[in-house]
Length: 558
Image 1 (cartoon, rainbow, N blue to C red):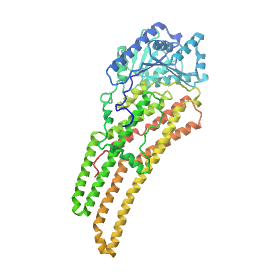
Image 2 (image 1 turned 30 degrees about the vertical axis):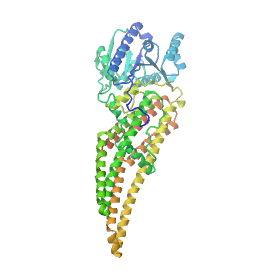
Image 3 (image 1 turned 90 degrees about the vertical axis):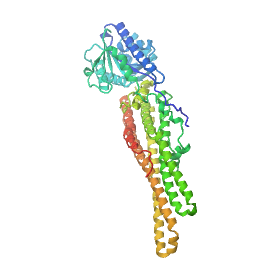
Image 4 (image 1 turned 120 degrees about the vertical axis):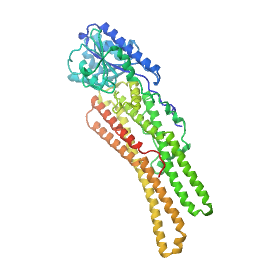
């Protein structure tokens, strides 16, 4: 077996809280606000503890507070969070030395430096002082990318410009992020959230919920769906396929077709965190399951062709005919056994599911390089999306400095380049395999056609020789077309050309995005846009591919 655990990794239990709010001049009672925030953080921690006790997750990680560390509400929340042992992530609209210019005095600047030093990670954006409101707006959007709940210390008034508290609250409503508002005197708390499957376009349209509902809401957000929450049934990898090395038939066919061997679909560098390790496990599982299913398909068509060849050969066997018939019976029984075992072990569905999970985890791993926490394509409500979302929710953010975009994002860009190169190589390999398997079948039919023409010529010129070759020709004309038809069936069911076309399309799309990125000036926003577009390109075909592949199930040829 490959070098990975037979049990699929369980997602850690994590949670992200965003904080926005007013500067000190609009706060009425800062100690009361701190007490209120501490109580709210405690409710979140209690909800996570209760969820952890139910099982289904891996290790719990402390909740994460994401803050821009502006004076006022941001820093009050940061101090409370650190005192409770929570992780702090700083999202800075400018480079730190530029951002300090926004603070009133030396004491405020010293406090800022201390909080940045205490943060688990810092995401520094490339905002410009001349476009201050836009810079704050971008910081608010990055914050929302990485939180599950937004707390806003807000007086209920209108915003004072782009990127302000009111604007972040409205954007949270559009994104479906629940919002808790705390009054500036710390005495009033209001929870607003749409249902988990319906978003509101405006904050005012979000239903009001009692504060007591917060614990249940957090539990709903982090809970995994029943059935596959513990992915226990993936322990099937500890069992070998029915014929031992039978699941290696597919890689052997690729080598015979001059297309190399089956390779991992994930040319990525391992970051060593839980998200990357989960990706590695599911990718390896997908490769194993794909080989098992595709090998079973090849074995079935091969056995079906062999049964016809044995039946045709029995014509020439004379008194040894019973041996050929016995071998034919054994071949058919093996075909039936292979089909039954393949269906019971559900190789195809396991392959499709594990590949879908691996693709989503791969995209999540790449996006984390640029502080993108919400994955395009995840959120269909199924177990796979919940599983992947749980990993991204708990994965720590990496510190990244985007204040110099030309020198930033190199890891994400390189990961996309590797994906482009791998897909281009896969397209060539699969196209070559399809062409050579097709040519093999054509050669076999050509041999049968040539033999038939020669025999007809002998009938006209040497009738006695033609009569003597009648049975061998019958065996040849029955056996070789069966083998050729089997090769055609293998080519269609495994869909070599379809794989080649999809891989080519992905490679071309990623190459176009890379060319555009290389051609123009870079910005933090542009880098994140590039990463989102590349991610969408990589997973765009997953749903349609799965739907198509589900129609090509393991069956008895005929």
